Image (cartoon, rainbow, N blue to C red; front, side):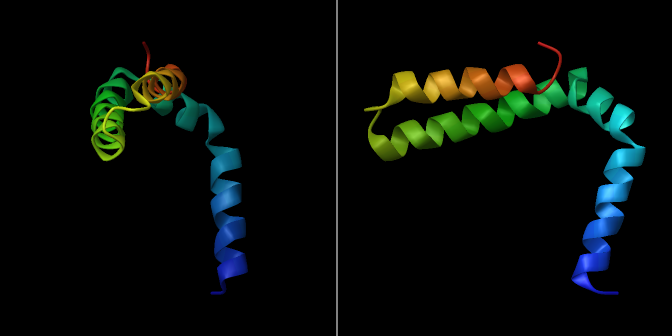
Length: 71
């Protein structure tokens, strides 16, 4: 099975299950997981930059958080 075929199969899976995928992305469980990941990523970004871009990091975090989960 080639990489191209695998890509087509993945695309077909997403098309056939888009409602279920969107439901999972907007779930309470996804919210909890995404909050932990986003907090960690934001904390790491602030640590690496010495907090110099904390406002921008928080803006990005909020934007991404609004796209995942139910809050």
